[in-house]
Amino acid sequence: MFARITTAALMGIDAIRIELEVDYSRAGMPAFTLVGLAEGAVKESKERVFSALKNSGFKLPPARITINLAPADVRKEGSSYDLPLALGLLAASGNIPAESIQNIFMSGELSLTGELKGINGALPLALKARNEKARAVMVPEVNAQEAAVVQGIPVYGMGSLEQAVRFLIGEMDQEPVRFDIDTLWQRDAEFQVDFSEVKGQDNAKRAIEIAAAGSHNLLFIGPPGSGKTMLAQRIPTVLPGLSFEEALEVTKIYSVSGQLDPKQAMIVQRAFRSPHHTISDAGLIGGGHYPRPGEVSLAHRGVLFLDEMPEFKKHVLEVLRQPLEDGEVTISRAAMSLRYPADFMLVAAMNPCPCGYLTHDQHPCTCTPTQIQRYRYRISGPLLDRIDLHIEVPSVPYEELKKARSSMDSSDMSANINRARQIQEKRYQDLPFLTNSQLSGKWLAEFCSLGSEEHSFLEVAVQRLALSARAHTRVLRLSRTIADLEGRKHINVEHLGEAINYRSLDRQDY
Image (tube, rainbow, N blue to C red; front, side, top):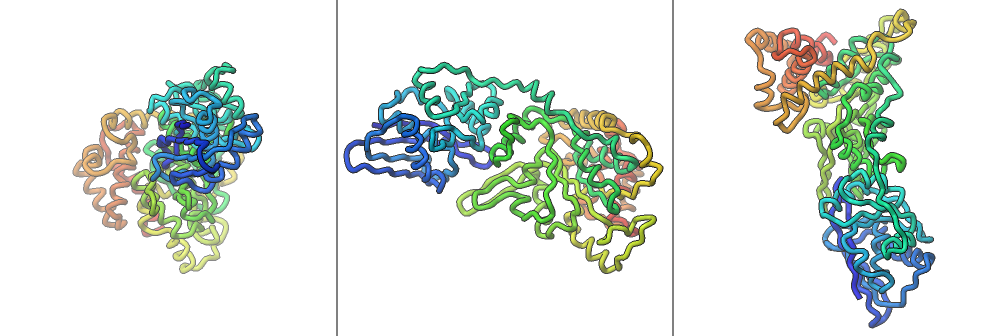
């Protein structure tokens, strides 16, 4: 007797179709064989499945059982194959009709009592099922809302193996799970912080406005307690909201990494990730024995904040170069090569010296010139080149601290940023990018064209500051964003001057 059931395996942030085939033969000695490049947790499913079947009231006669997971050259890992394996055994042994499980994508982990536990990757599974024109999707109850985000295919959430069987054989009626995306968007798109809480620092807020408008990378430099972290934490409040496609892409990353809150079916806020400086390169970029997305991918379409940037290991910082340029991470292993999206806005903070008080107007600095130089050299020139704005954040005077609220709040900044983003969206509507930070090649020459006066000004600046070709490109991109914030079609000398002024670490007097 034979049965075939459909499930899926995760490959990066996408799912690939897996056919679970069950051959159930009463001829020969009883045995259980599992083939198809199954990893440890999949091999252990035998014990969970047979205990779940027994405790759910199903009896399987002794037989020679062969399980094949096709395609056989794709590695399978995790416990999500428990449910399809149990239902495949029931269909092959004649306990349920084989046609009842046809063309239904199933996934779920079984406890020994037959209850269904949550899995990773329910959203990619549902997307694959819809693309394959499947009849339905069956997942654990805890993952049902996540899978139901995908429109156009019925999703059924099951609490136990017994419930799944009763539904398949028609003993129980159950409606597909409904997902109300509008309510979720209104409830979860609200922030608990605001820029009005940051006293003073108008220059830093202006820099944030520019960075957010063009999705530029940003570095804060200032003494302890000047508000660098407060400023960074409020950047997501002024970024444009996620589109549905962007939210879907971000949710897929969190789903496959197992970091999606079961109570949150979809991520609708831009991420703010702030890893500790002790993080490893695999934790930041992704990887491991079983490759998983790293912090740069979890910050996709959002903000990656590196507080005390020089305290990070130098080799960890250097692995940021590729994702900052390409917007994605490639993780290569002997058996596979995976790509994870990593289009994030890098925001970093550092002190001007080891003691932190070099630029403080009242607190004396105790560092030697050699210590200061060694401290700054922890961040390499190539990495600094990839950061568009270097912003000095001075200590806040008491006159600003005693004010009830700041003159700039998130709503005002957000309105300016959205106007600039709309200009860029219209300008790049037929091109494969959306923001000024992605301009390169012929598009840079076309959209950042300069007049003779602007060329002369920029030439002097490049020579005096010894700017690299990459830094020159980023000055042009930044100038384009400043012009967009003012609603100007062309870049002028004032825009170039402000952009160059935001690269304080390139100035010899700093």
